Length: 211
Image 1 (cartoon, rainbow, N blue to C red):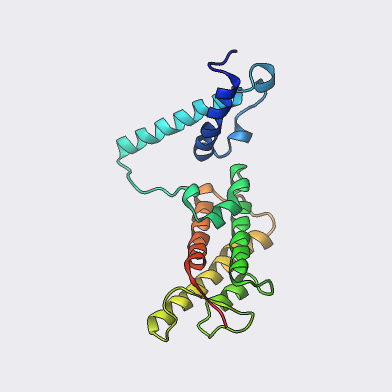
Image 2: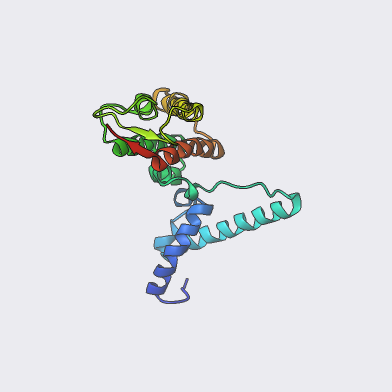
């Protein structure tokens, strides 16, 4: 019924608390009731979410302690910015499949920005940018390693081209073109984001080659 501290102090703390809650309980805004915010105290939803988050973190620590599961974990916040910025809003509301699709669009758009093109997208775009052919006017290339004629260079760029095609043909297209697909489990959707993260890092870290 009452708060410890002033309203300004609480609001400032909430900025940090909300970032933690978004990591631990990404769907808290829809899953934690907010009806008491108006009837009792505007911070009731935050308080309930904090209690849930504390329980989740405690159980996770206990499971790791007793089962010895020290496997590495992938944090969505550590993904490449293109990917997470595209998916974040939908992810927090539990729309994982749509979040993956939005991330794919974001990677495509940022790649277009990198090479200054709007006339090609998705598979056709990545086939062009990863091509080992010399750049042409209006068709820059991105080079993942030295732009020479070595077998390694050819292999790397051929692999990147095939990987990009797999991401868009195997992940993005079914999500966009198939009706009535069930929602993706969060861990599976996170794996899809990781695939686009690899592609984004390749493009973002590559050297641009222009005619």
